[in-house]
Image 1: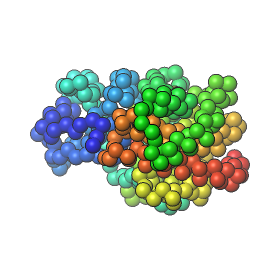
Image 2 (image 1 turned 135 degrees about the vertical axis):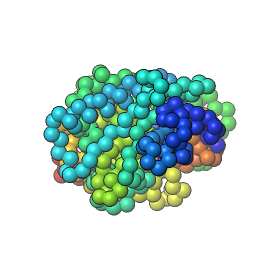
Image 3 (image 1 turned 90 degrees about the horizontal axis):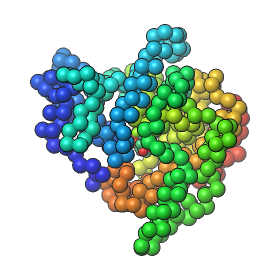
Image 4 (image 1 turned 60 degrees about the vertical axis):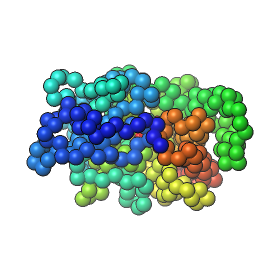
Length: 374
Ligand code: GN1
Ligand code: MG
């Protein structure tokens, strides 16, 4: 079951035909496993143009998709300028930014059909993505990729970006929403749901840690990616080096801590976020060390002392927050994250809570690691 239905093939070809000549389209197939938007790869007949990514933006989530496009265009323009005008140390790799594809017959950047919002984005070829990290070198590349992305947008003023997803990564807001949903529920929680609820109740005190620091001016808003999970990083197919961070819908002003926390909760979970093996979910400290090393190798210069102080909090908070989001969506009947079965968001929540518990169990080691890398 999907939160939004799959459009028919006929429809897909006619939409793709607004970006490229229809006669050139050889195949349109689903791409990746995003939880929110619908993504397709459009491939041309050989030697007739380049493959591109076609996406239906979920407008229940992104209520102003034109603002999402504004951010995407702003960020790619900024990075293009920076890469062509000032030397950036790329350690001998290419760095690619996903590019918005224009419509064939107008100046526009998107198609609206039957209330759906479609856009085309360049496809980064000769590259692979990973669902989980399984080597120290991959971990370093994941960290480097996020660090380079932050590095490239670090001098883009945050106020040039729109707030495309209000409340995104604001844990206290998710918690308030969860409490309302729970209050309106008219049946008791089962044992698995209760386990999630107990975890949430025992962690209420951590929910506001980053927002409080932001309110106090200790941490500052910057342009961020918002969703740098491992499979949004692209690695060169031959060298294995990180060459792009894709899926730029959630680029907006935020705290780099949301990104670092999200990258680590995804990159340090060798079983992946869909695992059924709950008992064995762990936050892998060695992978964490390599991701942070890779990140800091290119991002250290713009991190403040306060940024370092809140790193552990971010590593604990973001898996908690995602677990809370999955669990609340489960209680609400799976309206936000796409699911294949009714209990999938509940299982996903349990994975994130176990990850959060594993971070907590290693608090001392993680803090001394941060101290060493600082
Ligand atoms: C969603 O759709 P996808 O997979 O790119 C979500 C992220 C979560 C992620 C968990 C806009 O991202 O915040 O971390 O699922 N994106 C949005 O897999 O909510
Ligand atoms: Mg995403």
